[in-house]
Length: 254
Ligand code: PGA
Image (tube, rainbow, N blue to C red; front, side, top):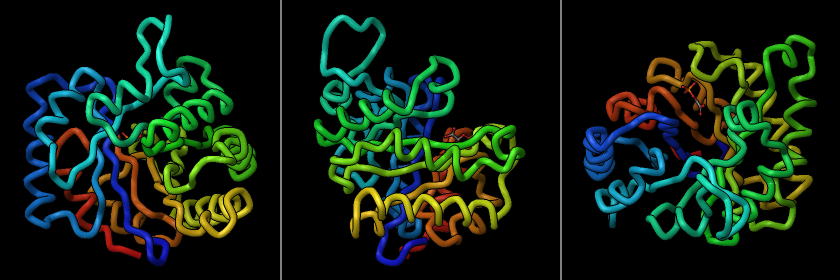
């Protein structure tokens, strides 16, 4: 945790969730209102089809809503895409950009992630910008260099840093049950903190850096207790309110 920073726990539902799953979102709101989530700020990112319904269920409450991706343009001939302004209109305040699954499946680049983060910021959304190395890159000893390159390429240097969150997600840890050692997470987050200072100056010291990749209630306390780990981006364990709340519940303000 970083001194003075309120932790953020974001749930990425990926391509999961039908209307029947909205009850999990209601349970998240109730628990947050009952003060059962420690000092964390919560964001849930359901599939786009559920955002409007979720917005109605979360309105006026402590749980925020995010999209999982946005197009860099505001509107136009982009079949299947969703713009930042559409997410905002539907009730979202956050959006994930540059997730490794999109980088991998659709060849999304750092430059595209940056353009999406800029578009999100222009609409007043908070962009959660994802970075992370592959297993081969880590085994070759290049993890910090790879992630540093992604940070430099994916973060818009002129943006308001309060509208940016970084999520460090080792690709090999996503959905696998594997996590890096505490030392490796701390090393990477310290390197990212240094880069944020270079790019954004003093504001970089309090930008949130989330860890993502197989975060579960059982490992959350260790991971979220590390220096410069300001919360989590949670995939599988965010689909059930009980697990998501179990992760958020260990968070303490830095
Ligand atoms: P996971 O996914 O928690 O299921 O590993 C994390 C993510 O992809 O954001």
